[in-house]
Length: 449
Image (cartoon, rainbow, N blue to C red; front, side, top):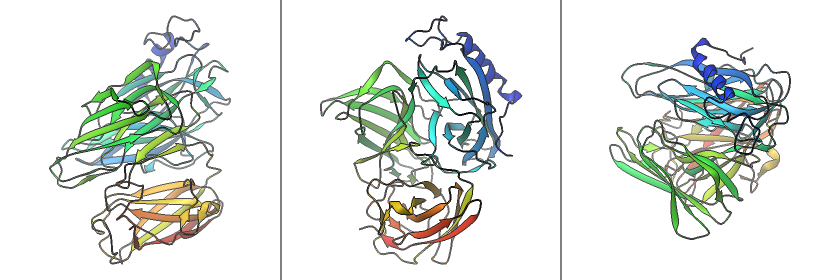
C-alpha cells in the first residue's frame, strides 16, 4: 500500500517543535489554562508526522507533486496545532483531507488540488507552526486520508534534493467546536513579457461575511511585491498587508479578527520583474492573499481570470468526492487553425481540463453554478500541430457518467475562460466504472468571441 504514516528521523526537528508546542514553550500552549485566548485545549497529544519526498528538481526548474499519506489513528480526532517544515527549494506545502482511502504513489499534479478535497493547511515558509485558539481547529476521521501538495522551485545551477513534512497535535475529544478553513483572494490575469516588469490586481467581495485571522502574500520567483488593501462598503481603502519577499513572506496575524463584510472588497495587487526569456503566466506566477478564517464551513477561493475584472468565488471540499478508485486517460488534440484565438496555439499555452457530473451539464456548457468534480492541467507542453496529441490522466475518479471539456489559455487569464481562449466546443462523454480505466478524446476547436 502506498499511503503510509511516515515517521522520518530527518524530521526530528518537526517532532521536537510539536513537543515544545504541546508544553507551551513556543507560546502555542499558554499557561495551561483552558481559556478563550488560545491556551492549551484539554490535554494535547502529539499526533503523527508525514513526509513528502525526497524528490529531485533540475536546475532552474519547478516541480509540483502530490503525496498520499494516511493516519494510523483508530478514532476520530480534533487537530489543534499544525507544524510544518520544508527544505530549501520548498515553495509551498498544502494539505488536504479526502473522504476515502487513496492508494496511489507520489506523482506530479496540478496546483490547487481537486474540488472534492478539503484544504486544511497551507504554508510557504521553511518552518511554520499554526496553533489555533481554544475551540478552533479541524475534526479528522479515523485513519484520515491526507494529500500533501508540494511545490518546489530550484533557482540554483545544480540539481536540488527536496522534501516537505507536516505534523499534528490532537486536542482532547470534543476540543474543536468551531472549524477553521483557508482562503485565497487574488487574480490569474498575469501576462508579463520576457525580461520586463509587470503588475496585476484583483478586487474581490466575499460571498458572505467572514473573519480573517491570518494573511500572507503569495507570488513565485519573479514576484517583487504583494499589497493588500480593504475597502469597506465602497469607502476608502486601508492597507492591511504588504510584502516584498516571495520566498518567505511575513504572516500577519489579526488577533481580534479582520472582519470582511459582504459589501466590503479586498484588493490584492502584485508586481513582477520577469528575468526569464519567456512570458510569465499563471500558474508559473501567482498573485494571492492567503490565510485562515473562522468560523468556516469550507475553504474559499475568490479569483479573477479570463482577462476580466470580476471575481469568481468557490468553496472547495464542501461536497464529498465519493469512493474514487478509477482512472480516466485523456488524449487532447486541436484544430490546425482556430479563427479568433488570442495567442499562438503551438507554444505550450496552459491547458486546463475539467470533468463535470453529466447531470450538471446543459447543452454545451455546465449548469449555472455547477462546479467540476475533477480538474487537471497540462503545462509547458507545446502542441505543434493538429496531429500532435497531449496526454493527461485523472486519477482516483468515482464511478459515474461525466462530461469532459478542456480550455487552452492563449490570453494569460488562467482557468477561467475569456475572449480569445480556445476550447472544446463539444464536451466528451466519459463513462467510468469502478476500478477501471476509461479513455476519452478531446478536440480543441473553438475560440471564445
